[in-house]
Image (cartoon, rainbow, N blue to C red):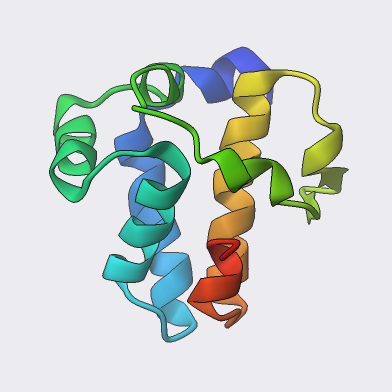
Length: 116
């Protein structure tokens, strides 16, 4: 899948998959929302608005109030690629979010996921 195809995918299409992944492992939608809001700076109302507007991932991250300053602490592998080594800033942000949801689904404590 090319980067452009991922960038133009609607966040509203991916969001339910994040929730399903987390819920299958006993986590909640609220925890997924908390992780997304932590990374992007959206509040819950703004997150809902992004989903309702059907924005693509490029727009979702471009309109994000502020990427969390501790996001650079997110390390690890997603889809066989180390997130800290990704050169494209948008792709790195997308993979950061993927990694956070993965950590949530694996049962990691929320405080550790949120790099507190």
